[in-house]
Length: 358
Ligand SMILES: [Zn+2]
Image (cartoon, rainbow, N blue to C red; front, top):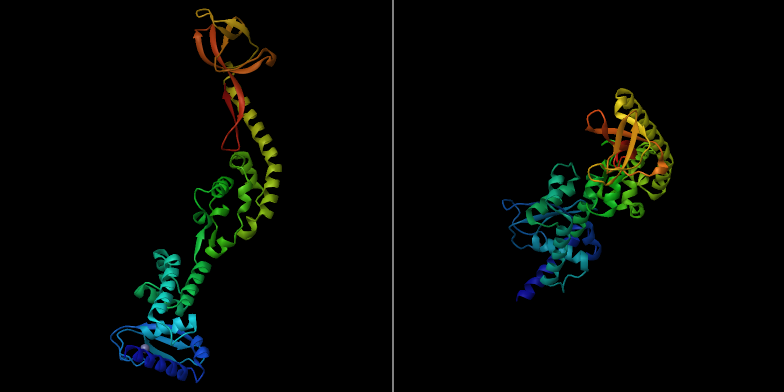
């Protein structure tokens, strides 16, 4: 009995859909129909225009070729999308229709989330996409796989994110990229440029795999990188291994000039400081002596009746001859002084040289 009823429904479904499609056979007619919008309970439509069953909720489908709109129940809608997927109607069990719907649900679960829907709420998206969104908000899944895919495609090509947000936070690639561009301003930092998910998927960031984190985290190199910026071009091109290898090459060439410049600046700075407080800085040769109380060996020097003892942290060898030192402490007032050796050291994080005592 139930089977007979189902069979009659299928006959009505086929006849009515074919008629509304201008007499084409079902295989040709069905693909012309698209989900258009859906309706609520309080409506004049009580019977499905395909199978004539009473319906509580209805959907509108529209024929893309002749513009005809039909108001149908969810059963017939499921039947239509399942027919499109399987090209079977008579033998189509409720089970396989459900299977098709669960396929749509799975796709939606994987690709459409809260932030996705919230973003869509602020867009002026094409009308059919907005209808799909309404459908998802009401039922939790899209009317068809095709509709869901169209939505995801629009999202992926339209919504934009700073590149940095899309990078897998802890990956070597992300670490290297962040190190490379950490001295860039927000406006010029390639990682702050916005891309769509589609553009991100097309980016080839594999060049970063071959770069050593310690090498790119060098302040002199990063300064050189900023100064050799190849200028305006698309992110995909800028971050391509082709452009990046040229860019890095140029930066490495420029780095030596930046190192020289920083060295000179540090020397000039120190000369100024020495000029301001000459009595603190001395050029001293050392020889081996002994600590008068402990008897332990120490490096010492004598100039104009004053004795200078090299701090134990400072290393020294006779072959160095006179070295630049700074008085750090008076050991015996006016007579014996503790001094530290001064050395120029590259700064780890910025393109500078600093004088350090050691
Ligand atoms: Zn129906």
